[in-house]
Length: 178
Image (cartoon, rainbow, N blue to C red; front, side, top):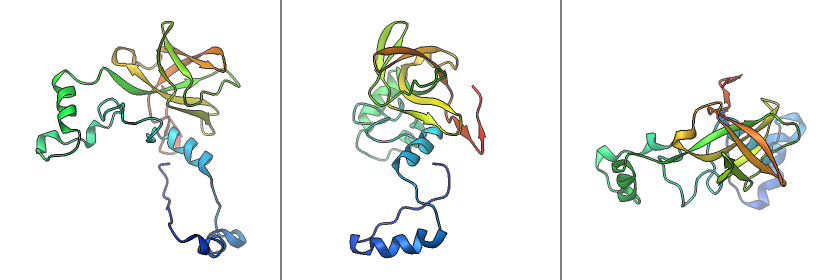
């Protein structure tokens, strides 16, 4: 989420005790997965199984900064990443978008169109409490990454306009424009 936080792991028999110690009598505030998903999406943080999976690579997911090919260390997938780099880089990249139309919330798996052609699906999507509008991610061809590019999302059988936007959507306590 971009905020300080913790994950705790403990045996289920201690759940009641832990709950009372952490949130009992107004000590803290619990949040659920919906909160986690909206906050991580606002920050542009990828979620495995949605934004990244075994069909994507680090360069497509804009995670190339963590790939250290020059250091020469062996790792799983190194040869595949070297091929992508040698071929000139990724041909598509994970991109953010916003939807202005009220009530049109992009959800994971909805079809995404560019110039009338299906190009991908919504990888992550939902309503942003910080921006008060719908946001999402999808993979776009590298020639279509410019902020302001118009795409369409098929929301429950109706195509709605979406606009490519830089990520993160939310930045350092303020909403990032464009």
